[in-house]
Image: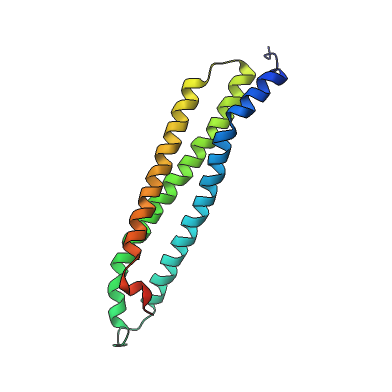
Length: 144
């Protein structure tokens, strides 16, 4: 037997409740775009350095930067994974909120745990980005 559908008042309450997670989802999506762009820059730089012939003495010293680029790529990759999982948690918040309203199941604790998890992962992703940014600001990034 199907449950009675929620009333308009219940649905408007749920929509108001999921407004904050919806904004968080938009912010995380934009952040993922920023991380992807930074990863592309690191990969492009690494490909440029790998293309330098070993016998080119004037630019061979730039290849020493490859280990730093690997560290930056690892941080950005971890930041991207955390941001994607944060987005998934945030999407689950919205799904759980509407699903629990439909079935008239209390959802406060589950949504709260998902929201805490999403924010913790987002903060972790921001910390990784800050570390990567600090590493990226070295003199060799401003040389060709």
